[in-house]
Image 1 (cartoon, each protein chain N blue to C red):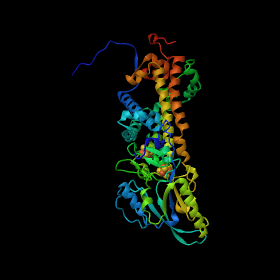
Image 2 (tube, helix red, strand yellow):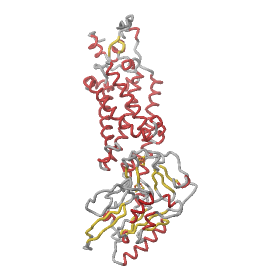
Image 3 (cartoon, rainbow over the protein chains, first blue to last red):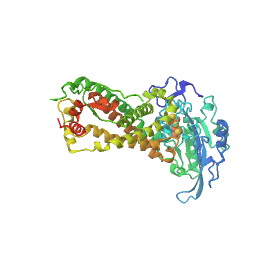
Image 4 (cartoon, protein in one colour):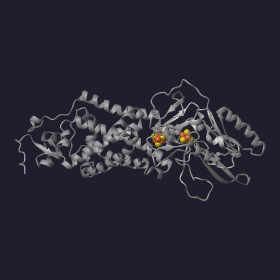
Length: 291
Length: 216
Ligand code: SF4
Ligand code: SF4
């Protein structure tokens, strides 16, 4: 609980409005894929700062190590060896995978435990594992397939954007450690400006399609990507991510309220029917010749 | 050995449910109430407080699917004993067309079987709904089964599970109310018998078959 209650603007499964008194600058982490060398220093920094130790795995034949996000690995570098379109040759596309801290987080929408997922005014989406009931619904809600479930304690985990560091004015551990400057951290506006400058530079160097990834389908994110080749699908990022309509239906206030209202109506209808019509009774005393 | 209790003879009673049937029915009912309370807490935060009955929400979430399996097993054990009496017949159509009048006590639809068409519909809807709840529940069951299903399967299952649970609540609500409304039927499930007058009025065909007496 690195933040104060005044900094919480959204809480999972809550019927009341969270505190709105204090605004805050939205922060963002910018991941510039064109500068990333895949050294995994950020992965190590994440492990160190959060005191996580994943199990030693096996080499599955590619550079991704560990092979996937886990409850102990909140960020993973993914290496995609890609034949680029328009005969631009073969390239390593290295994507730092982890939570994007959506402005409209599907995980938060799906979570049934009050306060197990919170969103801070600065945009960080944080899991509060002490409130988590281990249902895994957050996975169902996330359009980026991020939260990971721990078999050990039956809780969900993901990147916190180092909310504890950010709350005391530090940048996330991964940003602090990145040796090439591929990672930057600041206000969302500043990060977009920085990305804009970088896009101009990339375009002048022949990356005509270079683009910023800040998908509007989830209200924008607080982790931004500079994609040198533009097309998000090359980097295995969803082109137009949004909370699945199934999740939206299942967790919509309208559906839930309608459901509860109808259930209450069944009870009320029973009471009223009984009061109007009265019970069906058989006359026990005239058993020998029923009318 | 204690001598069997001997009571003075009273009103005519007709046996309706065996001890085994009654105990299974109430076991299903207990499982249903526990499932409903725990499920409701996960469906709408307004009801999150019901998790207090289960020693906290995290444990409730663990318990819920096990209760579901218990309900599934008990319900089908029970339903299997009753299915023959729940086959829809031609006479049920007449009951259906008179249903609204019956609910207003304006008609006495003739019932031939052990159950009327409303009870039969309840029976079959529960047979379907509980199967659906079981299957979708397996897909959502953490930590055992959920990881082996695709994300979209889990999304579909979550929606269906909530929808079916809703149908089940409405169905069981009607079932409980109907039992309360029809005076004398509660006794069938609490004591196993109904009065002769009750049987003659509500299920004349069944009464005739049970007692060998003529149809009233
Ligand atoms: S990326 Fe997934 S886990 Fe992260 S905030 Fe968005 S929905 Fe939640
Ligand atoms: S598993 Fe995810 S959805 Fe379920 S309570 Fe924990 S954080 Fe919320």
